[in-house]
Length: 572
Image 1 (cartoon, one colour):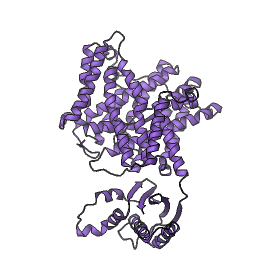
Image 2 (tube, rainbow, N blue to C red):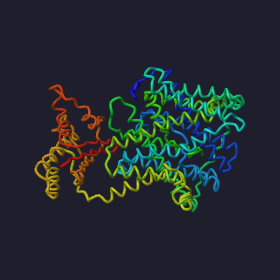
Image 3 (spheres, rainbow, N blue to C red):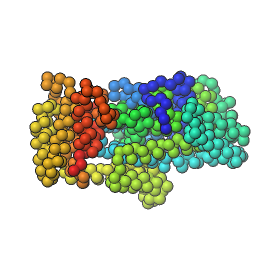
Image 4 (cartoon, helix red, strand yellow):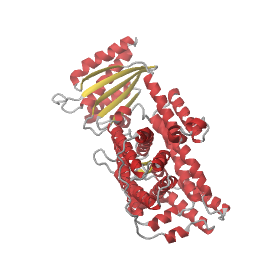
C-alpha cells in the first residue's frame, strides 16, 4: 500500500482531524468499556465510576499526544494511542473488591515505576523483546480481542432486527474493504469513516442506533472529584498482588514495544531500521501514563496498536493525526453528548470496523516476524507461542488449574502466548554455546587487540583464512564506523567497546556494544540505501558501509539512549 504521508509530513488539517476522529472512536470506546467493566464488577460507586472514566479518558488523550512528540526520553514521535489496558482487568477487580481504590492506586504506581526502570535499561532486555516475540504478540492481539469483538455483533436491543444488525455489519466491512482495495485517490483516506457512517445509517433505519443516549447526555460536564489517595499499607496482601501487577505491566510493555515497532515499520516510504530510542520513549510514556493513572485512581494504561492498522489502510502516518486524536480524546471527556455519539454506534457496526483493523494488525505481526529473518528456531517459537495463546484464550489447556493461576492472568491469549515466546527465547539464549568476549576503549588503537581476539576465536574453531579475513574486515569497518570518520586522529574518546563473538551453525555472530554516541544516523539504514554508483567525493565516507555489505550476511544496528548495539553475522 502506497504511503501518502509519512511520519514527518503534514496532511491538511481536515484530513488530520478526520483520521484523528477515527482513532479517537476506537480508543475512547475501549477505554470507557474497560474502565466501566472493572469498576462495575468490583462494586464501586457510581460517583467513583464516573471519576475513573473521566480520568482514564483525559490521561489517555494527554499521553497519546506525548507519544506523537519526543521530549527527551519521553514520547516516540509516532502515532501511538494510549488507553485503558485489558491486561489488568482480572487483578484490578481482585484488589478493588478486597481492598478498595487506595491499594489499587498504590499497585498501579508500583507497576508504573517498574515500567520506567525497564524503559531506562531496555537494551538489557534486547534478547527477550526480539522482533520474533514482538511480532508474535501482535499476531496474538486478534486472538485475545476477536471473541469480544464478535460478541459485539449481538450487541443490540433484544427487540431489534437481527437482519438489520447483519446488514449494517456486512455493509461496513464491504465498504471499508472495497474502498481500501480499489481506490487509489483521496477516497481511500476516508474508507473507515465512510463505512462506519453508512453502517450506522443503515442500523438507524432498523432502529438499532441508540439516539436516547445522545439526547439524554449533557453538552458539557465533568464528574465530582473522587481522588482515592494512595494506601501505604505494604502488608501481605500488597506483596501477594504485586507480582501479578508486575507481570501485567511486563505484558503491557511487550505490547507497547510491538506497537512502537509496528508503527515505525509503516511510517516511512523507504524501510528503516527500528529506532529503539523511540521505543524507549514509548515505554517511558507508558510508565508515565500509568503513574498518572495510579495517582488518579483509575485503570492502568497501555498503547493501542490501531494506529499502525489505520496508517496501512489510509496511507497516512503523519504525527499530526496522532496529535489530533489525542486532543479530541481529551476534549470528549468534557463533552458528554459528543462522547455519547461515539458510544451510540451500534455494536454490529463497531464490530465490523474493528474486524478490519485487527485483520490488518495480524498481518503486520506476520510481516515483522518474516522481515527479521525466519529459520526453524523462530518458526518453532512463533508456532508454539501462537497456538498456546489460542489454547489458553479458549480455556482448552488444563483450565481447572490455569484458570485461577495468578488471578487468571493466563486466561488472556496474548499474555499466555507472550510468556511462552519469552520462555522459549530465554531457553534458546541460555543454552547457546558459551560466547567469548573482550572489552577495549573505543578508539582506533584498539584494532590490533580486537583483530587478535577474533583470530584466536577463528583458530579455535578451525576456520580457514577466507573466514578469518572476513572477520578482520568486519571488525575493522565496524570499529571505524563507531569511532567516526571525521578527525579520528585527534578525537578524544572514553567510550568503551565490548565485543562478543558466538559460533553459529553457519558461521559467527559478532555483537559490538558501545556507549551511546551522538550520531543520529543508523548505519544499517546507510547500508540498505547504498546505490550501485556514488559520487567520487562520497566514496571514501561510504567505503566502510560497502565493505560491511560485502563481507557480512546481515548487519543490525540498534540505537538506545545509553548504548549502541551492532550485530553482524558472518557466514563461513
